[in-house]
Image 1 (cartoon, rainbow, N blue to C red):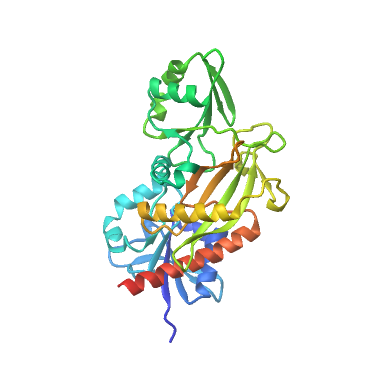
Image 2 (image 1 turned 120 degrees about the vertical axis):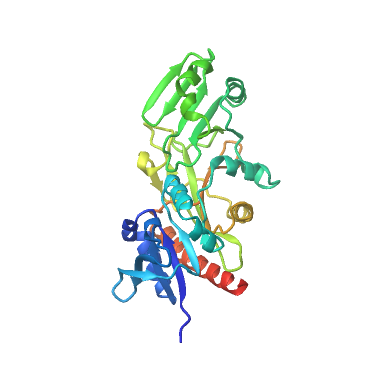
Length: 345
């Protein structure tokens, strides 16, 4: 008799069952002797969960009731607000399953900066950051670096990002995806924006990156935990900003996908593997059951790599080879977690 593993996929809304990543992952898990269930916070009842089970024969989802005690729960809640709400409303469920939740939460950009800064190896790839929006702190960073990128703690895909640059007359240039403003000084900027920035934004030094055809670009690295309990690279993509808006490289903001084989700056794969392995160790130490992450990585004019962001819910890669390898490695990671947790009981 086959010993089936029970894997739950936790989502913000059951509509997510139609997402290509979730459906393809579920099909691969089901083909590897896994019972795959999909549920949201609203699915959880006192003694059971009412959600969907993946039928590998018909390749469809079927409504079902299933046991609260799953082997592993893969967190694909799509927003930080939804995640906070889930944890607040389902504390009993969390207590029963806290050791089984893979990718337990979104990464805070400020926490990531502290994690990088505390590592002798990783701090070399960190960008100096701050979350204090006082005039003296902000001004000192602008004097030191000239330009800063300002980012919401939890937003992804470039949402809410803007750039501040110190001009020769000490005025301040504000640049977002669709807006440019000049402020007379730091004080006038803070009077306009500080209320929206405190406790939700950090600012980060803007390193002088190498450009291609005058455009900003970055590597997108996908990484997964493997069966030896080490993180390895599943794929490397490249995104380039448009000349019209040389601020964001995300495709949702007119960024372009660049084929790695055609790109002039090939990444040092040995160095990258070491960075990813060390990142995985640090993230697991801080967050627990981390099984995957993605990294936005830049190459500066001094030929040093710098980490822009690390995401706990990796982007969907448009490059089919990267996405397919990623889903296969994601499947293997979840099964590995199942077997590891089962053997520890």
